[in-house]
Amino acid sequence: MMLRRGFLVFVPRLVGLLVVAFCSLSIVYMLACTPKGDTEQLALPRVHSPTAKEGYEAILQEQEEEHRNYIISLKKQIAQLKAELQGKSEQLKSMQDQNPNPLDIRLDHSNPEKAQVNLLAFLRAQIDKAEVHSGVKLSTEYAAVPFESFTLQKVYQLETGLTRHPEEKPVRKDKRDELVEVIELAVGNLNSLEGDSNTKKHRVYTTSDFVEGIYRTEKDKGTLYELTFKGDTKHQFKKVVLFRPFGPVMKVKNENVNMADTLINVIVPLARRASKFRQFMQNFREMGIQQDGRIHLTVVYFGREQVNEVKSILENTSKSTNFKNFTFIQLNEEFSRGKGLDVGARAWKGSNVVLFFCDVDIYFTAEFLNSCRLNTQPGKKVFYPVLFSQYNPSIIYGHQDSIPSLEQQLIIKKETGFWRDFGFGMTCQYRSDFINIGGFDLDIKGWGGEDVHLYRKYLHSNLIVIRTPVRGLFHLWHEKQCLDELTPEQYKMCMQSKAMNEASHGQLGMLVFRQEIETHLHRQKLSSKKTLSEKFANKRWVKTERE
Image (cartoon, rainbow, N blue to C red; front, side):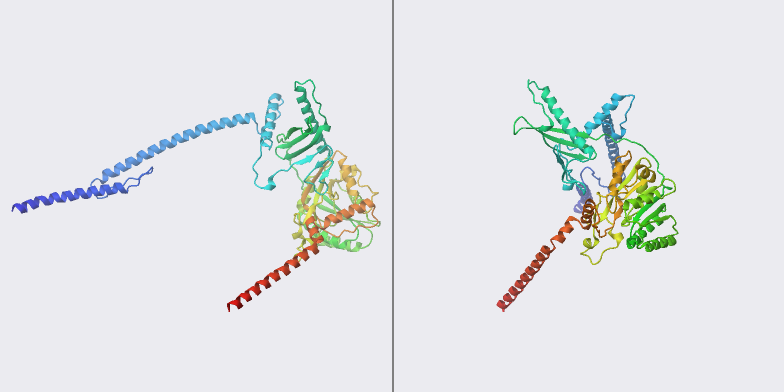
């Protein structure tokens, strides 16, 4: 009886101990499995736990406290950033006051001292930006701006083109005056330093002490000059570094240009060459008539041969396109390009018009016609575009199965052609300017020379000559015939032009060394065959040995 009563008393105690132990283990387990760190998440109490409500309230309260602290922290960071931004803004404003933006510089006549200070600050900033005191990291070897060197007599240049030479006297007046000014300024600087010294006797430098110099131009900053002069002894030198900073960009004018009613009279002198004229009229029909529409054509034809064929091409184009704006003039005399263009220009009876002097082997685009209008102005500007001259297609595309169409050939690459910067035949000007300048020299007969004389007339006038490469004007390749009737100077010019027209240096070199190249390829082929036969023989020998 006593044992049974003791057992009944012990069982509830044991159950209570087990419950306590189980709860303790659960709490330990939950604490152990809760992730730690800055974003520590609290374990949720069991749903059926007697303390579930209190646990949720505690968790929510703790999360709310964390969010509150996080918001306070963000507000502090925002306040710090605002303070830093304000400081940076004041610093930037101070720098802008000291080094004004080039577009913000104004010549304030009411305060000339401030304008001068601003300009000097800008020019000093240009020196700091340029590669004067230290180098600049460049992405490729082609990004470097090369120097050109010079002496008192010669300039040695990399970008030569076809009209410039690797070594030449400075022909352009601006370049000649620039280098003379720099040398004289350096000499004056050396003499001022000698004069400031305390020695009784000081050396007087002259331009004859100049040894050599180098210079290069960074288009957006300025030109750097490094000049070397003889020193006091044989192995001593004086070096002067100068910099010509470019000034700030300044607005000159802002104007609207309306070319809707600006007519272009295309003047083409011609003798025979009917097939070329047919090709020219295809281009004229598409670009001039269909796309542009503000155009007139004047053909000045020399002689009687093929004249009916040329007239027929004109009439067919007129009928098919309903185009009536053309003039045909026939001259029964020896061909003279200057005479034909001059006659065509003077034959116009309408109001002042833009004249485009053109040849039958020229291809132009509608965009070029707009460039012709935009770069001419009566009494002010004439336009001398540098056209892209096509190489011989049979040489360029000789390695292909067939020669591409004409439109596919008209791409501007060094393998396909060159900028014809020695030619001045294609030009746009208002008729009034052409008449006032005196027109062509009609004593020049045949090919070449007349265009250069007209170009020089414009250069000697007060008109602005716009000379620039254009992407919409092409000289189509044709075999050039240099006649014996030409003067020695004309014949030389014709042969030079002929040589330029054929191909690039690399392509011509491939033609000159074709025999050597073919011999090399033949030897390589024989060597390959020999190597293959030896490998085959070795395989057979190994196979025989194994058997």
